[in-house]
Image 1 (cartoon, rainbow, N blue to C red):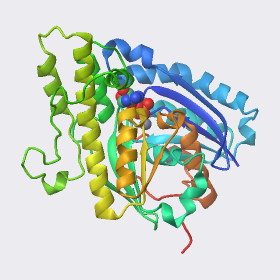
Image 2 (image 1 turned 45 degrees about the vertical axis):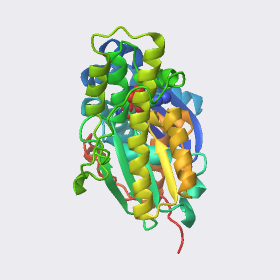
Image 3 (image 1 turned 60 degrees about the horizontal axis):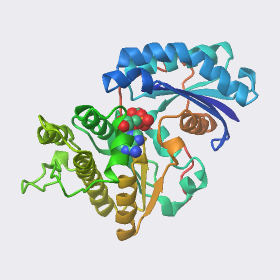
Image 4 (image 1 turned 90 degrees about the vertical axis):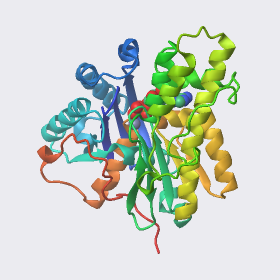
Length: 356
Ligand code: KG4
Ligand code: ZN
């Protein structure tokens, strides 16, 4: 069964053809990073206009590389939520058009579920193994920071998310403040390797380190805007040397990584998690990967991280999830009912769960 996946939730226009949920036949990604760089962040309306220009050639390339026609497809899967709604709308509308014209089913896929599945795309059999569950999925990108728990019975629970900036946004804004370029994550990651993470102290919001207890409702939530403001005051009106910039980057990265790792491990203990998974652009961060890997070793749970090509936004992860909905017949008959939404709700887990 070949599924065409389409992804336009943020600043990547992507299309992929995936066979049987795990064989990536083609995966094409057109990034708009250069168009947004001068603004230091993604402008939703600009993203939508760029998707509009790119969607047709990107889909055509994915189909050509897969050497298949729309008639050969079993269905079309598209990211429907969450994301920038004007951006999502382009992918959803294109997918509706293709599915309707080719008389194929249309599946709306949750982007978080896509990221989670993306981490297993090359090892999907693990999703059917009992020892994999519960899974704690950390989805960290420019638009999202969320901790999702998936239990063996296929229930998903959003334990927490950011109440202001996403982790990737915190990296991007820090780089903008220091005039380092966009996207900030990879730049700070690179600089941090040369810096001293203890040189500056940045806050670790909502972790209880200030001596104030974390309110129950924020136990698994994140807040990064205060860390960014703290950095602004640390560098404001100062002429920093190269070494000082590296030290700021290292200290800032450590603050963010520590918050993410601490909350993930707290969830591990509370929910007896057996697999910790990291996905989204920030999961490329070397400091975060190392910290999570070490913490997972201590907590004796498995650490799964998507290879970089499936960490950042791509359509293969969407087509992969779509395959399972189609196979199970979890579909809407009305293609026009698939709409772009803000909703974080992951809905039903479509893949096969471990047999009891
Ligand atoms: O998943 P993604 O490609 O797109 C979405 O936002 O959905 O993530 C992009 C984000 C950007 O904020 C970027 O700065 C961040 O991921 N990022 C990183 C690294 N590589 C990308 N953040 C920290 N360290 C990195 N190495
Ligand atoms: Zn994403």
